[in-house]
Length: 274
Image (cartoon, rainbow, N blue to C red; front, top):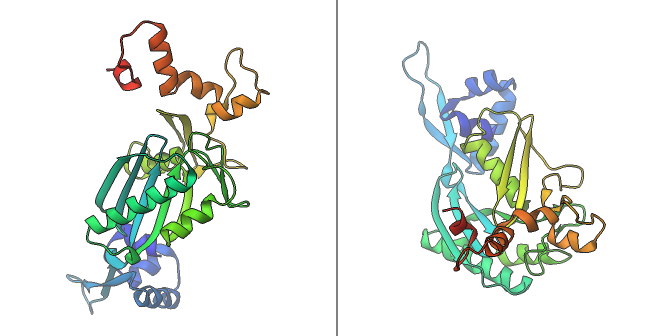
């Protein structure tokens, strides 16, 4: 119901019941709970029609704040938004991490500084989403296949991030999150099935099938970096760390080919294509 109110705007109890298929008593009970949690608020009354006016309700965007963290090998980025999705602050800095501990400390400092810049107390942040390379395994509560980030794969990292941030925290693959963003705000709107291809420092895809993010049975459906390429041995343990496709077409691979072709330094993937 909260999602419906957020998307629709000021609505009456009768409209919610009519459009959602819920009974009016159920709608009234849910609205009472949402008001009690300050997630919705009164927004005037209906006008222009016959009969008595009805109370309207809308999302209370400042009932809480959410933070998004993009944890990459070279950069760490953060954004803070209200519950309507309006971004009120961003920060972007070079990653200084050489270990999981230092990386976790950096993202904690970055997130708190971002909130302070926006005039928001950190205790007002109700949810944080952390996007990074790799696959989050909820059964084991840990990240896997995040070899580009020092110490990010394995036991204890997820708990340490939660302890550092002190909020509700969700973990997701960064390309999956990019696909969700494209679905909500980009060319993926009103498209039921699409593939979002990311080529940068790493390589991966985000799959949206029947309007839903598709992760696969183990969460690794988009991990195309590990596809075997040419003469590479798919059974070579080294390929699990490097990813044959990523090694060939990721940023480092592009620079390596440019160097072989004699392109003068300084070299970067961006410079090769501009």
